[in-house]
Image (tube, rainbow, N blue to C red; front, side, top):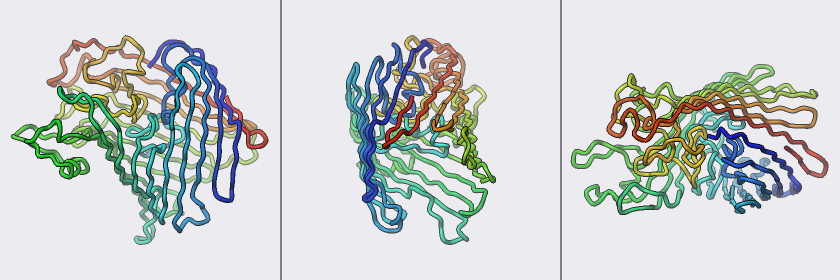
Length: 464
């Protein structure tokens, strides 16, 4: 969050593109040049960019991609593919980022993927969203092995009324700072799974969606919990994937790892010229959702896709409205009782960097870690995310004017810090009101983004 006025000029152009259609190989080379004024990189240039962020000051970026996709003419047979994409930033500092690098193998409806990929987890309009709660594409992809059904598979029974998709992941998050006197850093892993169901035959105009996703940061529990817990690796993993609480010597029930995710509902209706999608992501982090204590929090969206644009100079292809609310957390004085005082989204008392990877938040970018918030705002010890109580309105627009494509994102947020830097909230052991760490002032922020590009001859694109 940054209130400073920033002068920004960004020029991006794909300077070369070679396609080999015979073997589905694609080569892309892009170059960007820009200047970002002093201070934090503006919100929509660093958010939901899958870790591909330009540095401060003047810089040149070189982005190179090589990929092989599946042969769509052989959808029912075994096939393989890969993607390698890197970004080299020339500036202060200069660095190289492997933004994607994975191989994949398909057998029927099942896919095995290994490496770093670009992912969004949750039911939403992925092209224009303000960011899915759990995995928004804000951070670099976590190296992983994934087994999935990536596209909805129509069950041949029940008259093809039901379809489903899902995934199961083991990932490596690397070393993470831990809240222990003897363990400064420890190897940490990711567990992730999801299941989404669609109700409605493929040719129906109305389709209903429902599902959930579950993420867990975990690792090295046998080292810091001691022998009394008798946590072998296999036993620990069972606790991780089931979210089953454990109990030791009458200590309060708790869970192994940092668990979070969303429960999603939605509907889609195909009108003659417009496709409408309405969705809701409801968040969980600890016990609040089970008791319906944080039910006010969620991401709500309405997406409209224009299916009738042919032959028009001005084409409004897609528009999205979203409303994000994370301010409640089951922590208000009037909230229902839960075993935990409040959710404290993305923070964790043991995994001190919370739901982050390489210093960037993995979930919605509107929940801010300390390294992207303007200097001077208070933070409580142990909270890597110092602004997780947010109300935001977001509009996304995509269209075309003559031969120029354009994308715009416009967002306004009200930011309230955390309950540990608030003046009011549910009484709890770690919160004293007024806060001894300082009070986070309620702060409004507008964030705007506009991108436009067009295709020239010989596979060259240019954009601003």
